[in-house]
Length: 325
Image 1 (cartoon, one colour):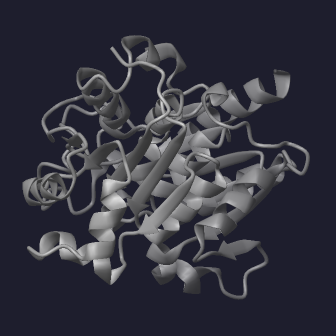
Image 2 (cartoon, rainbow, N blue to C red):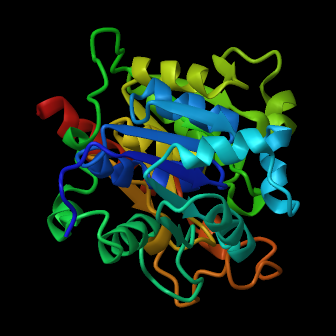
């Protein structure tokens, strides 16, 4: 059973944006028991978590000194850093990394797999909670299923400068296999404009191959390299439509009414956490194959069968519900 404490917690997370945002609800719960939570992670992700007031400080995983954790002889400043914390939680598959940390500090070090086994239909966030409860770092009550995605679980995003008519469309994803056709997103754009809304596209570093599609077009397209620019855009918007991606996880967590288009990945495992999220994926007999058969389905039928009508209907179900609340 976890108890209120003033101890300091260090989280080490090696994953990308979507994986990291998926544990944000767990970090929120851990803040009840730790006065200070710091993270070693990708620099951009640390800036993001700090900006959302989820953590106190972060250290960039890309720094050369942290590579020493895998080199047999750990840099002294890294060793001194790790010794500061009363508890270390490592989201990693690396037994070697866990062993290095245990050799440095006598403080408890817990290693949690960053995601559930590919054949398990358990959500990544619930998987993290399961381990944190098993280790005694959280209580069972902290993982109440009904409250995991409530906006009250994290800092409410200010609505003072929000334009509810601005709808962010994100046609990219870290994997091309998870992208709904760009032509379909443009159909969504036309429908939203016809309804008096203001769709705006956003492209990140993983979507630079799409940039030429938006040149010399009479539309607003945001190109970002800093996640804080994406946070600012989401704070100013009234809704989101995008593929299964890290950006979708962030939009949902920030409370935007979000429609997320799933294809070869399993939404039971990867649906973004948020108070207003709808997943669109046709009912198919085939198993979600993204994590178990990377060479399968070069043109996934699950994406090809998703229609703009289905996406628009899902969008208005949550968008209209928001406007009535």
